[in-house]
Image (cartoon, rainbow, N blue to C red; front, side, top):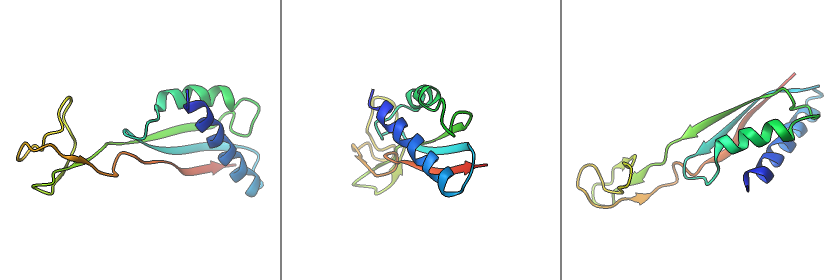
Length: 113
């Protein structure tokens, strides 16, 4: 449910960009969402359609760009995508540590007309 407030802020940001550009409407928003960010792109998309009604974002396309999480092996110092139900390094088998990759959550671009 925390996606509701995040989506509201996303729309606020896009509307502010439209005002700054003296644009009538927002045509597209690209949102980068890491798989470890804690946000569900599907929920944001659902809320976006509801919250954007009556705003310059009403007909905007919301594009979400997923970012896969990467783990780092402390022994091999390689980065890898973990397999389901495993944190093991594919090279040596030692459990890896999460990296910053996959925690991203930001507005990459707002296109206005």
